[in-house]
Image (tube, rainbow, N blue to C red; front, side, top):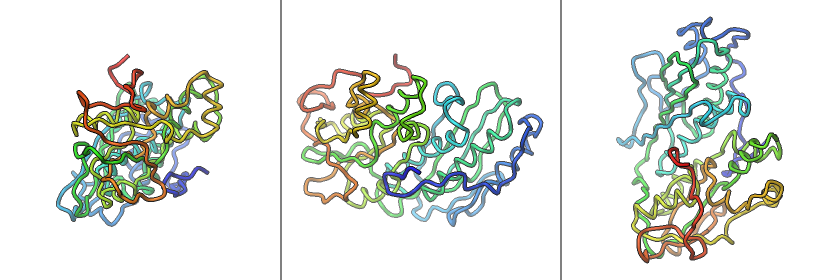
Length: 339
């Protein structure tokens, strides 16, 4: 069993006592039958005042501010059923949205699901997806509170995540200052290495393949960083260079990353050698690990799981990210409309 960067083991199929529908399709089960199957897998948390079954859910917001984020996963674009189970997709869909909440310094509280599925899809697929969503929410301390179900030609998973700041100020991308240190917690490059392995028809090393199928964001690190006085923060969804670039642009600074400070496990180096890829490229530009990267005032005592990887500088020209003092000339990360 993999353990998360935060040190917490991830549960697997904890919703095993939920009803199953072997051999039936979504069309045969029908809209309301499928809704019953999905909602049977939902476990509320104390923050959920009204869950599924009404016109809308009601989630407590003691802070009187709600942090919200949304994302889409499209079959063939963001996941493949021959690579990932429905449960994997559920874990991943929840993780990438809940990580956004944590990266604002907030505690995740709730998740809403919008699901488009073909009528001929086996009904076990959306129910196992819900198991994955439920289990990832449990890791983060959140709950699925409702959603919508529509028939369509291509499986599409739309997630909206909510969070509570609990009295803290949100940590945005725009607060980094020259002199701040740059630090990261979580894994970098693991998902990209796993994707490369899968793309070449292999299923091992398993740890990297699983990192691609089910990212493990360090959820508690976001609120903890806010408590330490983080000046800017984001999760690494598109690639370290790309996401630090968002901070550099919003903060009007230059961020320099020290490549020697980046962790490249020996097994990742072995994969890189086998496929002809410099593993540093995965660490710098591979996304979907959803590590947390933040800037802190100089002298901040960082917890053990944080690694200092660079510094914030005055921009020499336009805001940018450099690596070892030099402009990064390769691709900076994922771009939905790029080449």
